[in-house]
Length: 180
Image (cartoon, rainbow, N blue to C red; front, side):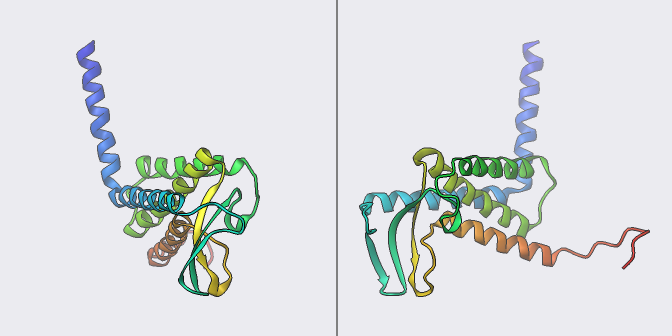
């Protein structure tokens, strides 16, 4: 009985390894995105004081600054104080991991796209669960854009990759009874 369970466990682990290997770039991009996001946010917390007005370091004065702020909402500070955003990050992350594990092998652009989106969702989701807010610090003053972070950059890179994947996908033939 124990021998058959150990064989089942070995088979399950091998199958899991194949599941991860089929979309390897997805996992590598997601892990790299989360690591870079977490490291930069840790650096910001260690380097800056959270003050009002926010502490800022001009890298290119008037154009690009590092400015430490927190955001309890979503993009552009929408939905401030909404506790459901943490659960949305969690749901998106779980769905993307399930897609990569259980779905078909994705194209290169899909793997990069979904990997970046997962990395960004996890990066901001970790902040929301651990801190109740997201740490933002990238400040594009030249266009008066809201302060953002590398998780946000990852999500946007992911969307760009997914758009490329859509454009590169070969046309599918129309079903027999459809009109052009």
